[in-house]
Length: 164
Image 1 (cartoon, rainbow, N blue to C red):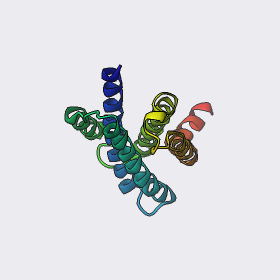
Image 2 (cartoon, rainbow, N blue to C red):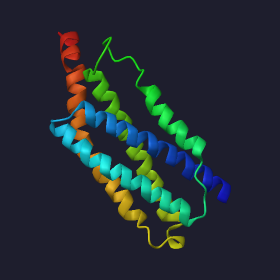
Image 3 (cartoon, helix red, strand yellow):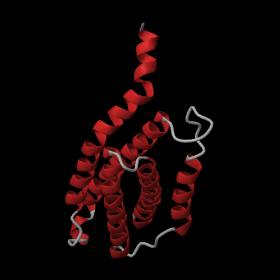
């Protein structure tokens, strides 16, 4: 069973690494905006969440897989090669895809904390998995209106014209 937990936690650590890199990139691309300010908050929170995961792993004597962490970092960098409807630069589709990626990662992280709260919380009483899950829910709630705005910016005009 601990092999399965080790794989699970290392997979989430790889995802957390990709998420931290993604939120940093999105923040830089949206500097000086309301979204940029939210992404700065989320960046600090995602880094803290990743550290909580590392503390969980250490508390359970689970070694970090350097290969998986490197894969998470690399996956985020490769994701930058995704076509965004422009030859160069940032587009409304870029923002939409970044926010969807963050939403998916945060939802997975929320599930992680809930699973750990249900299974191992008693072994690590200093880590409040329920509070971490609640913070992930808050992150999703704060991100949602910006994701809707990004969808309207990327697709609103196109869908309105198609409906005419």
